[in-house]
Length: 257
Image (tube, rainbow, N blue to C red; front, side):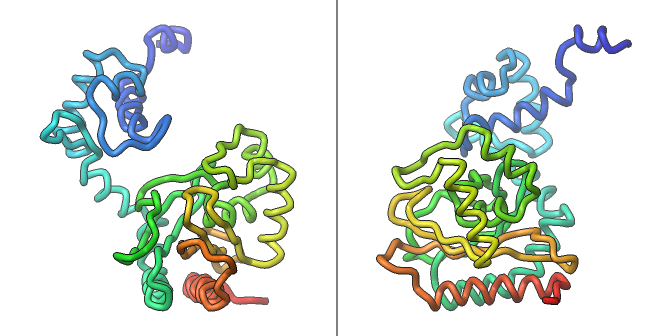
């Protein structure tokens, strides 16, 4: 089959299967969806969606809930945590994340850059911690999260400009969406080595984040603590975040010149 015949044949089976999974992340993350909602989000006929959802359920990638809706299945998580980047980073970082949690008893996040998103690969939380919408395996925008700002600040210049040229969602009145102001902010993060964010994703919560470097000095992840908003930044919490980032970086082989 030539290229023109391929185009006329429509989307491949694989692309339609992946569209089913993408339905749970775009246009907004969803824990559970009805068959009709999946069909609409995936832009697939209902009959096709029904058949392919059944395949995903049989494999374990989707789970059918008691109310008839569908959620992502554990099989996807089992496969995802086996990827070398996520598995190795989580394993090496966990002792330092636990230390950061013990010193703050607040939400602790570990995230990596994936496209234009911060992908959360680990999260530790206390029972009394402030409400946040982050979750392990979830994605949040770079400009509105502490870890996201760190990852964006140290990303390649072309990725930064591409991101800043795209529409930036304003989640709260305090979310910074002006490209020039964000460029200045990213420069400050590179200079100070820490991102400070207050009520830009979730009202009432603030974040302190720092970069994690590999042995070559490349920023490969970010660590943060999310707390209730206070009038001033707690120096002890900022120090704890910096210590966690340095500890994880050393474990990855980074040595300050």
